[in-house]
Image (cartoon, rainbow over all chains, first blue to last red):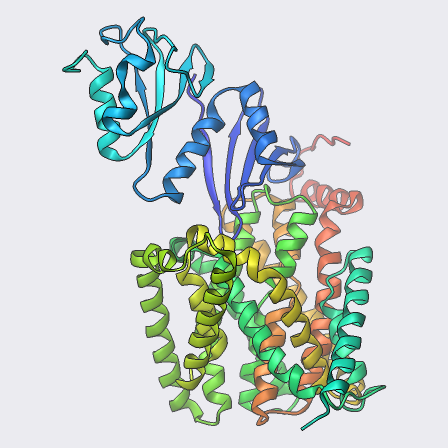
Length: 166
Length: 401
């Protein structure tokens, strides 16, 4: 399950992430500063060179990531971290012991109480983006939260079994 | 006082011509820099059709052009990138400096010029054009290549070195001799370090003082700040260009990103004016005598640049084809070689043929560089590499085609 993704800085351009697949092919993504992304496929004969370099807009990249999985969603969130000082993202797992298993997101009142927002839920490899207050948690869900350090700690406490109002 | 209507006509006609030339160059897939230079040569002293009224306008525009070129360069990098890269890239940067600055300096001495001209020519042959190279890499779809960070790190070191080299040259050209140059260098080193520390620690404060929300205010704010600092730097005998570069470094985050977008058109305009102005003040009649020396210098320094990239890529374990790609991509010299030559010409105390040599040299490398960069993509080049590899390793190599 664990994949090694190498990150390389490209001064003046952005950053490159690449990985080698189990089938022996190398592929990568060049993230430009202006939000453009290039999907890069490496040449099997010359591992240093790209065979194809496909520019993607933000929306295209997101659509592709939706098909492939949750990785980009989180990548964009971690990008927030650099843009807005003090804004952090965190993934919080709903354990079986959490008071909110089988209860609605709205019941947590997380945003009112901590001013941190639940922006997505990861469930069995799927991403539920912007879950509504009527969304029901299940054990094993991973909640993606954006907020300040204190806000995130607050949400963690609410979702763990230590919520005083649970 | 010149008649301002003549000025409008001359400037307008020339800019229109530049627009046509720029379009033409994009059709062919060349950098427009050589065409701008040629246009300047055609309309300058001893050219086909000397412009009289607009020389002053172009002189001021050219200075603003240099400042904008440098501030945009600074905006491209964050201070962390410059410093974080330093330790790993330093050996490659050192090889680069030795291999490429020394031939230029030696060449000037061979031609019987003085050591000031040698210092200037060394700088001209040392600095690769990051603008041309970044464009070539993007055009050839090589941004993802694993040798690309090597190329970029060499460019970063060069740009940092420029921040120390330009004040030194400015001082030496002002006739202060070695001692004055040393003092200028010490001041420059101190200033650069200070700005880097401030940018890394408090960069967000400087950036938050300029809001990214209001484009108009941001444009005026960044441009004003840049010109102000550049002017102050020039007053302090540290070069104006370096002051601008440091302003670019100090700005980061969304402000830098928006400022880049806003300043790009201005940079394009004034940089074009700068290249034209350099052509204007270069007498085309000086070019034929320096044509052969420039050609020889270009051939030698293209070879040394290629070797630089090859060795730098070898150090980080890139395979043979990637080493060649890195080496050949580093060949083009462009805007900064002209900036250095322009400084020397403006000072007026240096070998008069230097401008002609620099112009010819840049014309040669900026045109051939991007062509050379394509070489490793050709099948015959790959075949040659494979046969080389086969010769080096007696074991049979499987050939995929």
